[in-house]
Amino acid sequence: MPAQGAALSVRVQARREVRLERIRALLARTNVRRAARLARAEVQRPSVHPATTSLEALRGAILSLVNAERGKENLTPLTLNTFLTNAAQGYAEELAQGNFFSHESPSGVTPLDRIRNAGYFHPPCNCPQGYAIGENIAKGQPTTERVMQDWMQSEGHRANILNPHYKELGVGFYENHWVQTFGMVKQ
Image (cartoon, rainbow, N blue to C red; front, side):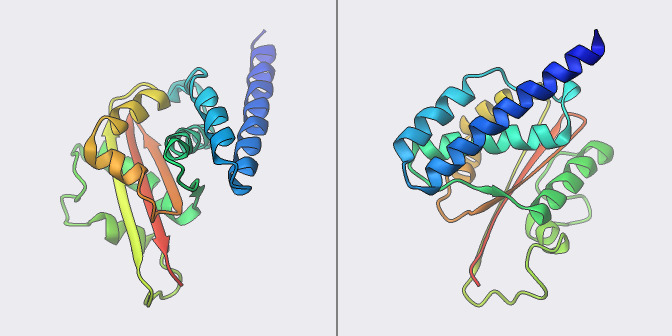
C-alpha cells in the first residue's frame, strides 16, 4: 500500500507541475488575468506540508503561491534561482541550528552578505546598473499555505513578495524555519 501512496503522490505532483507550467506559459504571453485566475485556483488546492514533502516540492509550492499573489497585482512572475536558493537554505539551517531569529546573524552577516556569498552577483559583479535584494523569514508555520498567509499579512514581507523590481526567488526550509530571498541584478 505505501508504494501505491507514493505513486499517487508522484502523479498528483506531476499533474500540479503541468498546471503550474500552463500558468507560467500564460504569464509569459501576458495573459495575466487568466493566469491570475488559474493561480488563485491553484492556491486553493491543499497546501504542502514539510514533513511529507521534498524540499523541491516545497520550493515549487512557495514559488507558485508567490506568483499567485504577484499575478493578482499584474506583476511578472518570479523564477527560482539556484544562488538565491542556496543563500535561503543555508540561512534556514543557520537559524534552526543557531537558535536565533533575525535577519542579521549573531556574527553580523546580513541578507546582502549571504546573497553575495552564495554567488548571486555573478563573478565579480560590480552591477553598474544596480541590484535589488530582499529576504523574508518565518518560523513555526506547518504548511506552505500558512507561511504565505503570515507573510502576506505582514506589511514588510508582503512588500517583498509584491516588489515589482524582483525577478528571482530563492526558498529555504529547515526544521520549521522558512526563508525567502529575492533578487534582481541589472547587467
